[in-house]
Every structure is written in C-alpha cells, then in structure tokens.
Length: 116
Length: 445
Image 1 (tube, one colour):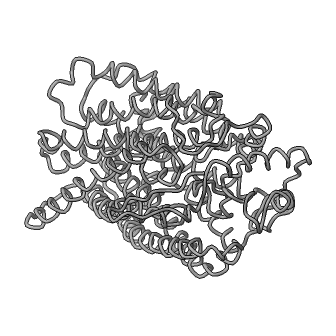
Image 2 (cartoon, each protein chain N blue to C red; image 1 turned 30 degrees about the horizontal axis):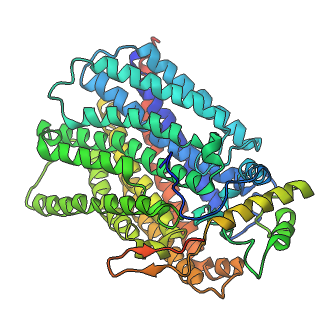
C-alpha cells in the first residue's frame, strides 16, 4: 500500500501550486466541515468534484472561499491563496468521482467503481 | 503516594470526558444556528477541540486503567512509577499545547489530528514510555498469562506504529499522490482505533474475569482466537472508510474480505448471549457490571451497523453521511465509554468507601446515558438516510436545502446530545468527587 502504485486513476502527481493549496486547506482545517470522497466533516458539502461540476466550477469556488455561507469562518484569502486552493481542488477532481454515479453493483454486494 | 499516579490519568480522563461532551453539545447547535459562537470561536476550531478531548478521555482512562491493574490489582512491581508520572505530565502538557494550538488557529488540519503535527512527537514519546514501563514490568512474568496482557501490550505497540503511520503524509512520495495519501490516512485511523480497542477490550475481559472471579474468561483457545481475529482487523480492517476511494482494486478486495470476518464475532456474541440467558450471574460490583452489560448491547447494535456498512453496495449510500457518525458515536460512546466507565467505577469502588447517594446518582446517570444515546444514535441514522437520499439524486446541488430538510432531525440530535451530556455529569462528577476524597486521605506525596 505504501510502495506500490495504489491508485486506479491516471491523475498525475500534485503540482507545487496544488500542494500549496493543500497546505492552506489543512492550516484552516477545512476538513472540519467539508468532505473529499465523503471523508471529513458534515456541516458543509463534499468538494471532490466541485471544479468539474458544470453548475459550479473554479469561479464559483473562489467566490465562496472568503464570503461563503453563514456557517463558514471569516476567511481572508488573497487571490494567490484562492488560486492555490482551486489548484488543489482541481487536482482532487482529476483523481476520481464522488459520488461515483456510474458504479456497477454486483449481486455479491461488490461495487465496481468508475475510475477517471 | 507516587504509586497512585494511575488515578491521575483517570481523573484527567473524566475531566476530558465532561469538557469534550460540553463542546460536543455546543458544536451540535451550529447545525441549527450556523452563526452560533462563530464570532468567538469558529466551527473549524471548535470541532477538533471536541474530537481531541473525547479521544483524550478514551486514551487517558484506558492508560490509567492498565497502569492501575498491573501495579495495584495484579501486584506486579511497576518498573518505574517515576516514568509513569513523567508519562502523565507529558500527556497533560501536550494536551494543553493542543488546546493552545487549536484556540490560536495554528492547525495541522488532518481529520482527527487537527493540531500542529509537531505535537505528535511528545504524544509518541508518552506511548513509548508507557510501552517501556509495561514490557519491562511484565518481562519474564507473562508466561501462561490471560489474553488481556497480550491485548494491552499489542494495543501499545500498534498505537505507536499507527499514530506514526497517520503522519506518513509528511513524506513527499505520499503527499504528492493524493489517493495514496488518503488511503493511508484513513487506513491508519481504522488501525489506531483498533489499537485503543485492544486496550479497552482487554480491560473489558479483565473486568469480566475479576467480577465473575473466573480467570478462565481470558484464557483458552477461543479467547486467543478472538485476539488474533481482532489483530487481523486492526491491521487490515480499513474497509468502510476507503471503498469509495479510487484505490487499486486489490486494496478494496482485502478490505472487504477482512471486514466480513467480523461476522464471526457477531455470531459468537449471539451464541454467548443466548447461553447466558439461562445463567443468573450475581455481581458484587453492580455499577461496573451494569456498564459492562450495556457495552455488550452497544457492541451488538454497532456491529450490525458496521457489518452493513462494510458491504460495498450499502457503503455506497451510507458513506459520507451521518450514519458513519452514528457508527463512530455508537462505538466510542456506547462501547468504549461504557467499558471505561465500568473500569473507573470498578477502581473507585475499590478505593473509596461506599457512598449510597453517589451510587444512586450514577445509576440515574446510567439509565439516562443509555436512553439518550439510543435517541442520539437513531437520530444520526435518520439524518444519514436523509443525506443518502439527497446525494442519490444528481439534480440536488444546493447543500443548504439538505440542511433545511433535516432540521427536525438535528433538533432531536441536539436535545438528545444535551441529555447525554447531562448523564455524563451525573456519572462523572460523583466519580471525580470520590477520587478527590481518596487523594485528600493520602496526603503524603
């Protein structure tokens, strides 16, 4: 699990900008409210595919970072920090789907997920 | 008096339980009033304070219990009480530093380990001191010992490893690969919960053998079979967290196969429960006995839930919903806290004089604890079903609509959570008072 290539997706490794975004994500403990692949807090929405969602996307995400809904903390991200966060979420988006709407269900209870 | 240092762990653990419970009630209110406390301390700082504090209760109470049982009940000469005190001081200081880290907004931001990552170093050091003291104390004396000694030792060793494993993301090879990072992170959480379960379930078996005055409870092939089954699950049982991650298929197959082995535990529980119906076991230590019996019930209902969650087809819908919260609350409160309260009441009854009023308050707390937890647990499952239905419809994309439609469930969840906290006060305060009275008696530090 540590050494072998574990991912089924063909997403590349994270860029430096995406890593910077992940650092911001962590330092502000975004996972307290938001989920990625359904893992994280429950107060806010899952953000795995927010970037590729035709109804949302990068501009929508950026608009929410500093002035989101009432329950969001009062963040004051710079434009550069917002771009880093978008690059992180863009990377996450490229790794797969959540919810995995085209998953196939087997009679034995197994679920074959769709990989990107 | 230094030899009584295990009680420091237990007292601090009880305080953590009460503070963690209070913070839990406060953060639950945010689900109905999103601006609640936002100006003072936002949710992203308050939630980790809750999770860290309640995890501290589990770790401190389990650790204090193990130290107490080996040194006071089993009468092994502890290798070093000084190291035990140092372990306590290290944990207490680190706990303070974690609070400062979260209050000042200096966070590491990994789920359940949101404090500054560097603070894991003194925590690991504390576990190393614990392990050193434990193994040196028991070295050469462990032959033909009951299973709980093995479980405690295993819990310590694996806690050290899996707590380290949860920080592997600091290595760039792992961090740069998001899916691998997520897979390892959530696998390690399953494993270190498995590690503290080794400490707690070992404590449960220990208590059962002491209350029933039957040492065979922790001996024999069956006891050791379940120990090894638990160990396998500890190492490989990451199933329900990671099914939905686009990991390599073999990781998902292994997780599924291992999680299904828990059916054996489930069937064993039903078998034993049916068998025990014909018995009329009289327990001398009624409070500890009741908490242990309650934990058996919670093991049963949570295992049912866990087994359903471990079937990928069900997990697909349940994952990421409050059903997983019901699972974690059911196990940490219903099972872990019940067993640890059994352990604490067992120890307190040994140390201090019977107090009828205190016992009455604890019994009242015990009843309220189980009823409110059941309502709390069910409300979380209903909230989870709401979300699963909402997520299943691709047309739904405004998250606040889900929140609004779930508001009545959140109200029940908040009220039952408040009652649960009240029950913890009814149980915890008399126990703390009796521990305090014991300390006043022993003034010669």
